[in-house]
Figure 1 (cartoon, helix red, strand yellow):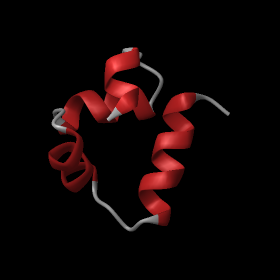
Figure 2 (tube, rainbow, N blue to C red):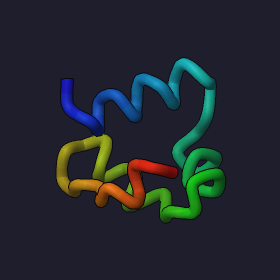
Figure 3 (cartoon, rainbow, N blue to C red):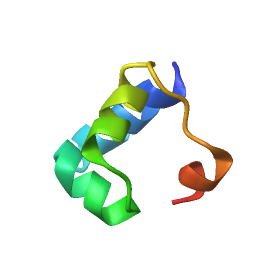
Length: 49
């Protein structure tokens, strides 16, 4: 399972929308979407959030 898949699974288990998670971790919803789809890789700093 990729990191994007893990993030999406965790987000869904917590019933958070992409936008809600983006606000919580101070990232854009579009960037989070790209991570979940495997089109972008989060930095170590972003993973700590």
